[in-house]
Image (tube, rainbow, N blue to C red; front, side, top):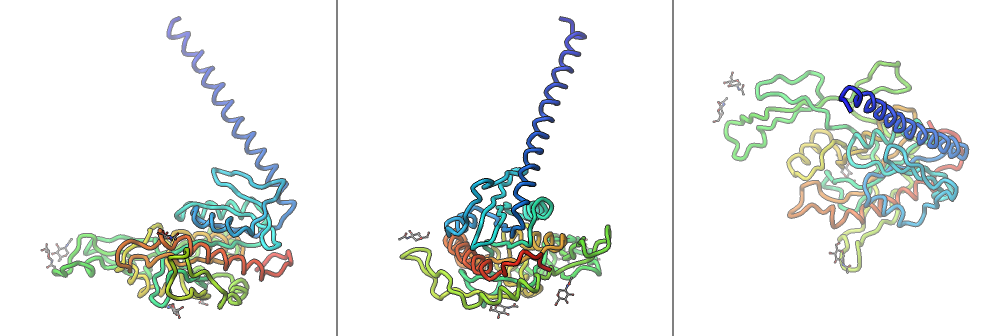
Length: 340
Ligand SMILES: *[C@@H]1O[C@H](CO)[C@@H](O)[C@H](O)[C@H]1NC(C)=O
Ligand SMILES: *[C@@H]1O[C@H](CO)[C@@H](O)[C@H](O)[C@H]1NC(C)=O
Ligand SMILES: *[C@@H]1O[C@H](CO)[C@@H](O)[C@H](O)[C@H]1NC(C)=O
Ligand SMILES: *[C@@H]1O[C@H](CO)[C@@H](O)[C@H](O)[C@H]1NC(C)=O
Ligand SMILES: *[C@@H]1O[C@H](CO)[C@@H](O)[C@H](O)[C@H]1NC(C)=O
């Protein structure tokens, strides 16, 4: 067969396989859309978002999630959205995966596709406040994305819009003359778009404010009993507490560094550091949904001797965040009105 005859055959073959691929995609998409329509008939739901397997395991191990027998889940872009009932309230649950990209993508999917009343985001976090302890649960009132940086040369001038500055040379050991070629970092505000704002116009936003009504409901949880022991031989020295109304920080950084932990606390007054909360909160609020963030403190974010405690206490912190979530859901009025 001459090369010139082979070519049209190849083109035909390729065209067929591309078409077959495309129709497989749309078949799946149509199937998903039908399932989404079906589950939304049973809504509205409360959206629940965790991040990692440890948090998901603690949630399912609590035994409080009763899956919908007809539509236990729908898989969308690689994530599994599960439907069921928790403490008598219909919920749609998803584990988003680590980092801001996952957090925002999963939250926007929930907002776009499902009939939800609001979003409860829960999991574990690093503790950046010396008056808080591992095992405690924080339900912040404000969350900042502290990972939007302008990174300057040593002699570069900071942008006047920056809300904070980190001078790398301040952390030289030995001090020397304070010069460090990593220069300094300016902290930018988020460009926040929202249904409440003018379309296509971003607002500068440092702090995402947690929905006041939900925060007030959460304040009833202060004083609730939390788990103190990982097992029979490993317990925290003090009974963990739940605190409502502190500040939280999020960036695409697993924080395990005492100096930077201290910087965050001094500059931003934040009591916890995680990798998703600000993304979930800002996306929920931007879409007009109330949101609450509930994080159990699993480690000291670098202010420890030896290894980070997340391996040892991550499970316990996750269990305590789940306890708070269950208490919060129980306190929600059963009205199906949308919250504002
Ligand atoms: C910064 O400015 C000083 C004084 O003008 C100069 O000596 C130095 O080389 C500059 N450093 C860098 C990294 O540009
Ligand atoms: C500081 O020390 C570094 C390294 O010795 C040197 O290259 C730099 O020029 C010094 N900068 C100033 C401003 O003295
Ligand atoms: C968030 O709350 C603070 C303190 O109450 C307030 O000053 C700020 O304007 C609020 N931000 C937004 C975007 O509503
Ligand atoms: C308790 O948990 C710790 C940390 O995971 C583990 O090292 C230890 O073996 C456990 N002890 C018991 C009795 O299960
Ligand atoms: C640190 O945590 C304590 C105990 O919950 C709290 O009273 C204090 O206000 C927190 N510090 C800041 C700066 O938020």
